[in-house]
Amino acid sequence: MVKQSSNPIVEAVGLTKVFRDFWMRTKALAVDHIDFEIHPGEIFGLLGPNGSGKSTTIKMILGLLHKTSGRLTVFGRAPSDVTVKRHIGFLPEESYLYRYLNPRETLDYYGRLFGLDRNTRRRRIDELLEMVGLSHVAHRAIGEFSKGMARRIGIAQALINDPEFLILDEPTSGLDPIGTKQVKDLLMNLRSRNKTILLSSHLLSDVQDVCDRMVMLYGGTIRAEGTVEDLLEDTGRTIIQVPRLKPETIERVEAVIRESEGLAIEKVSQPRQRLEDLFLDIVEQARLEHVETAGATETGQTAEFLRAQGEGDELIDSLSSDTPREAPARATEVAEESVEDVQKKVTTSVVENLTSEVESPEHRSHEISDEGDSKPKVDHSMIDDLIDGVGGDDDRDESKG
Image 1: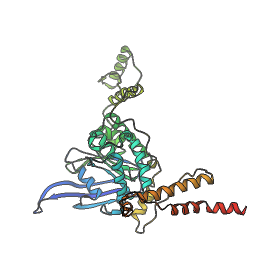
Image 2: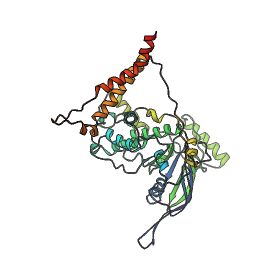
Image 3: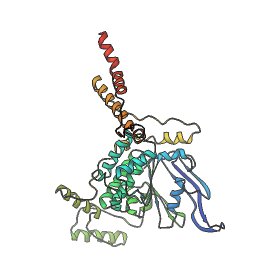
Image 4: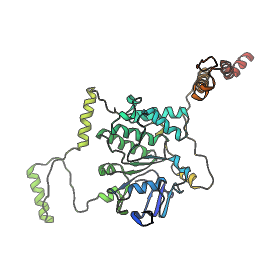
């Protein structure tokens, strides 16, 4: 059971949304006075048939729609507050991606929107493409992808900013059973890292497998809410599971039940494995036989930057406070290296950064000579001075020795 924090990620009290026409007449009461909270580190399910108010609720949480009445806060602030946006990842029901960009370009684009530096973008893109099993098609145009493959890219873009709060609207739509299983495993992994997830889905089995708590909407109102165990418990039956019994033993057991309880056994059946497990076993066997496929390959482990422990309550407190506070620094592992190795790495980094800056489109336009030579001109003297500066202190120390 997830520990409930005094500061919920999302808090809704009497939340209402009414759509009106030009003359302010009520067209639809989409959300009708609903109350719920989403706590840090839990997977919260939002269920209901079409038109029940799920998408409207999600859009209000994202600040894309304004509430009509009630109270709604995200990280203790109004959903329209831009300071909370960088801590949220969102996968819409339909992934609207640029068809002529490839996966690497798409993720780089979203990384730029979040202000990530170039090295961070490169590292995260490689990790995410491996995680969703699309490294081998990283340079194919997304317009050539199947719906399931495009969905995998949509999941990757929702994670590019390492969000504390992840909103997923039908994340397994279009995915095959392999992709569905991998998405559910990913959600469980993210929850173990103290990420908070809002999951909206029509596939009830997916919600049942991963959610801690859920609410069920119908007609814009909450019809049921609670933990999965509480909602799914069948109090009208008792199940006794034992190894396979002989027919005569079953008859004796039924006789005892009839004598003591006045009841008869309703059904005797043999256990069956889930269709999902059978499907995954068949696919795994094909992989062991090295059967080739043009679709998504087996996914890798969770991206390294997503495996870092989340800040959780500290982030909520910092966003809720009136005075800004720096986010806690992440722990880093420093490997033991010689002085020479450090100098080589610094030198290589300086040369690459200077060269890349000169070769950028902005600099290239200023470096074209009058004779029409379009090759970029690199000031090697400046690079040499910087290289000499890196090793200068050590040279002076050696000369003193």
